[in-house]
Amino acid sequence: MAEGNVPGSFRDPAGFLFSRDGIVYRQVNQAGRPDYDLLVASGLCETLLSRQLLIPHENIGVIEGATPEAYTVIKPKRVPFISYPHSWCFSQLKDAALATLEIQERALAAGM
Image 1 (cartoon, rainbow, N blue to C red):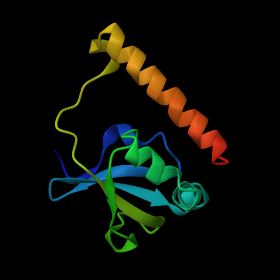
Image 2: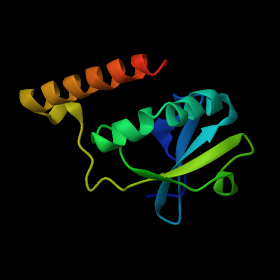
Image 3: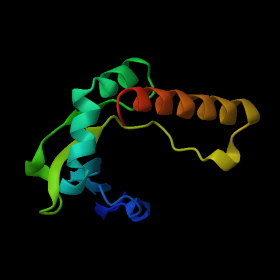
Image 4: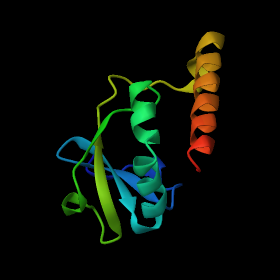
C-alpha cells in the first residue's frame, strides 16, 4: 500500500484513513470528537466489539496524527482480505444488512 491518505477515504468530514510504514490508521478529526467520545463513553463501542460488529482497534493518540486537525488516531486490526458487496452471495448480503440494522438499533439506543 502506498503511503499517505487512502484515496477512497475522502467522504467522511470527521476523519480519514491513512497509511504509514505499511500500517493503516484512521484519524478522527476535531469535527468527529463529540461522536467518537459518545461512542466510547456510552459503551456502544465495547458492545459492538464484543458482538464482533466493529473491527477491533487500538487508540494510539494524537501524536501519530497525519494532520493538525487530529483529535485521536486509531489503528484497526488488519482485515485479512478485502471483499466487495458486488461479489457477495445473497446470504452474505443478508448478513451485512442484518449487522447494519443491529448496529443502527444499538446506536439509536445509545443516543447516536
